[in-house]
Length: 188
Image (spheres, rainbow, N blue to C red):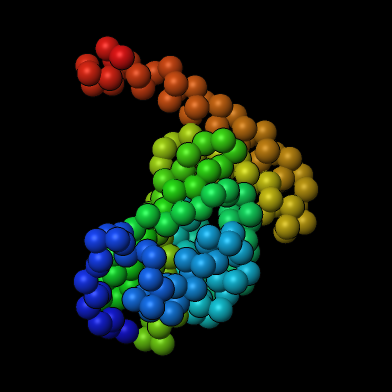
């Protein structure tokens, strides 16, 4: 599907996120579901064969509406205070940026959404930063998904492994990365 060019932005809404009338219906509904942290509500705008690239691993992708809704339900349930900051429409979808909180950590994400010829979301690629937010998400999601799949032993293992990875990432962020900070930051 080729989208019409995005309308001019107003000075009051330079990010293009406040007026759902200016967005394709699927994007506006996606953002409403995200703000409401309602993964089930995303089902209405997902193509039946939607593919979501995991933001945490290259080992697999989530394929089909049921799998994607399951992961979105768990992810959105773990996040707090989701706020979209920017929407950049493309000829085939949009790039959205958002901020959220997860277990006391600020999370920044970019969502690349591809629309199909019917205007439904057919592709989702999510990028996260900083590393401690990504490992906190891994720590939260892995066990939830394993429990949902009835794999309690795997959930226990992922709880321990995710916690370990998060502690390593958080410690490195606090202790080691400041060693290579720009001089103006080190002087503070």
